[in-house]
Length: 85
Image (cartoon, rainbow, N blue to C red):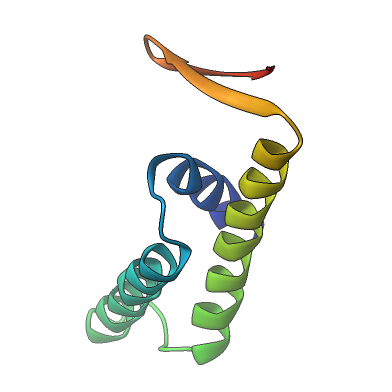
């Protein structure tokens, strides 16, 4: 769950619509679970989908919270700088 929080945090910075972003991530994680099952690398587990999506959503909400508190993110080269406005 914690592994997907940074992805949610960064995509919230780039995308404006939370519904579309979360639905795209849900589709992505479902495809990953299907591939895992087809290639016999693991089992298809709905709990993984729900927990990974929850972690992603937490990251998304954390970015929205920091943005509303006056923090901003700026890209400088290969780095993202988080600073107070």
